Structure formats: C-alpha cells, structure tokens
Image 1 (cartoon, rainbow, N blue to C red):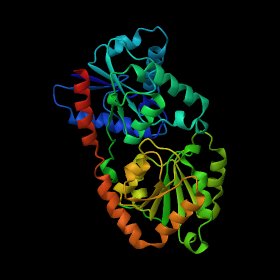
Image 2 (tube, helix red, strand yellow; image 1 turned 180 degrees about the horizontal axis):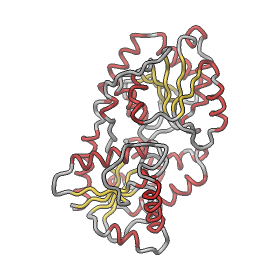
Image 3 (cartoon, helix red, strand yellow; image 1 turned 90 degrees about the vertical axis):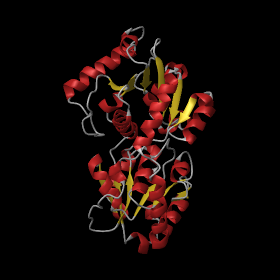
Image 4 (spheres, rainbow, N blue to C red; image 1 turned 45 degrees about the horizontal axis):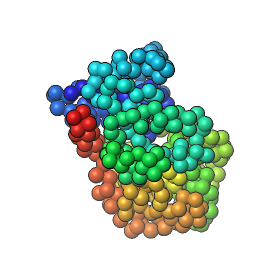
Length: 362
C-alpha cells in the first residue's frame, strides 16, 4: 500500500505540529512492513535533522516545494488530484486547503484553539483553520485526534461524528528519556514553548514575581522558545530579566533534553493544548511538572503533575511554592511522570497509524 503523508509543515517555521510531523514520518517508515511505502509530500525523501526555526531543506528546494503547494491550493487546479492519485491513502495537514476528489483522505486534528479561543490567534490563523475544516476535514474518510480532549472538542465544536475520529497519542523522542542534565550556575525552573498569548507566560511571570522572596532567590526561571504572534509585551519582560528571569531564546532540538533534565521543575500553565509536547517531554526527563487543569493537559499528565487553574496567578504561585519547597513531592512526581511518559512512544504511535491507514483503505 502507498501512503502519502503531507509533510509541508517541515518546510515552515513551526513548533509542535512540525515535531509531530517529523517524528511521525520517521516512525512510520521505520515500522512499516515491506509492502507499505511511506512518501512525504511534497517530494521529501530522507528527512534532514529537525529544526523549528526554518525549513529542514535548503532554500531552493523549499521554494520549489512551496510553489507546488500553492499550485495544489489554487482553485480548480488539477494538481492535487494528479499528485494524490498514486496513493491508496493521502494524509493531509492544514497546509493543504483542497482535498483530492479521487483519493481516500485522512487528516489529524491537533487542537481547536482557533475555534475555542479565537482572541489568542491572528486573523490569518483563524481563516486558515476554518478553510481547512470546511474544505478538508469534513471530506475525509477518517480522522486522527492527538488526545481524547481534542476529539471531544472536535465533536462539540465542529459537529464531527465521533465514529470518524480515532485517538492516537503522539510519541516522545527517545532522547528525552533519562538524558544527561546540562550544567547550570544555579538551580532553575524551566518553561519551554513559543512566546505567544496562548501559552500564558505573563501569568507565569507574575506568579514567579509573587513567590516568597526566600523561595524565589534560590532559583532562576529560564524561559526557552522563539517569539511568536502577539508577543511584544511578554518579550520585553523576558529580556528585562526581572526577578531572576532568564530568556534563553530558541533552543535547538538536540539541546532540549539536557535542558529539561537539568531543571528542578517545569512550569507550563498554557491556556489550551491539543496534546502538550513539553509536558510529556519533561516527564520523560524525570522533571516534576506544574501545568494547567484544562484542555488535554490533565489527560496527558495524569496524576504526575501539580495541576492549577491557569487563569489564577495565586494558584500558579501556590503550585510553584509547593514544588520548590518539597523535595519529596518533586521526587514522587518525577517518578510517576517517567512512568506515564513511557506510554508515549513513537513506535506505538506509528503502528497504530499504520493499522488506521489499512482500515481506512479498506
């Protein structure tokens, strides 16, 4: 069977979806039986190393493939049917805005933030997601959701038949399991993620500043991640270095496991996540986690994290103080988190994905 996977996210500046795409293609190719062929659209062969800040390919190769993507998305263009016709199943991302008419198609639902919290997104992102839903998601044979929370949101907000959606958890790279901790001058609490309103970083900074001085002065708060949409105010605070906050900027994928492993705790009070890669990565690295009690985050963390209301700075502050003043709580959460994270493996995800494709193809 020939399976086409839309890998166009690999050509863009992206975070969570790009991580999922890169590792999923690699795992599908590794786990597929000899009779299955996994091809990455648009004509992406062996995957170069993962980077989030730019395309994984060189500039000329990237522009040629983006031109093909634009041709496929052009109204009335036959390009999408010509390209997809050679596959038994074509798995789409939200970069493809027109579903092929003659090929059985599937897609992944990563999150519903543009529908649930439109105020946290640019108008361009909202329009792109709406077009993807109407022109692609509603025309697919079957869908994958990255969590039960995301599936429930899709049923509620998009009125999609739950029988069409299968939940397949993403995996965590092996590099995050028991990595060598990076060395730091002082103990630190870590945040990793794009600097954008949805991540709720201002609330974390406010809660950090409200910690008892005796607690806060023992640690740095390291915030790692590239600037995103609507980040100007938050970036100014990060670069100002208030209350022992250090901004590390974008950290390459290869350096993240050690950065996680060196942390005393990981703080991630996001307002919404479809899965929440950083939380799972921190748990894999045996780091105690503080995260939100909404969206998919309680589902992913299970009983392995301090859960707080992300809209309550008092709860975030209180959760941080509990973690930072209780070595026994940190040790217990680190142990439970590692056990929970072991359930998120790319080979498991890929094998479930291959079974999903075979059933969809009939």
